[in-house]
Length: 100
Ligand SMILES: [Zn+2]
Image (cartoon, rainbow, N blue to C red; front, side, top):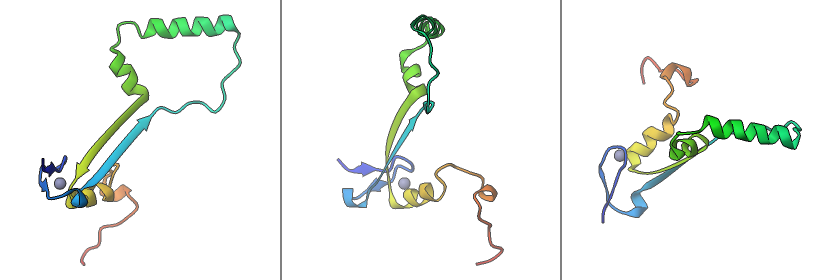
């Protein structure tokens, strides 16, 4: 089965012409945790469980860890790599020359 670019849909002739992008997003954790008594800890857990009541478990998981992978053609890899955060051109630190 031929590969197709996940961004533009172009057919990718072979695996050696494909570029794989893996994005992993995960929530940060504090460097240190405050000491709490077992009772305070249990109350905090109960409060957290109550606040998550009725929330889709998949949404909860996506909030703390999300992994995506894409296959790109060479052109789309260049576009993605040039600005992976989709920043406005003027805030990327570069300037656009008046002429080349
Ligand atoms: Zn593409």
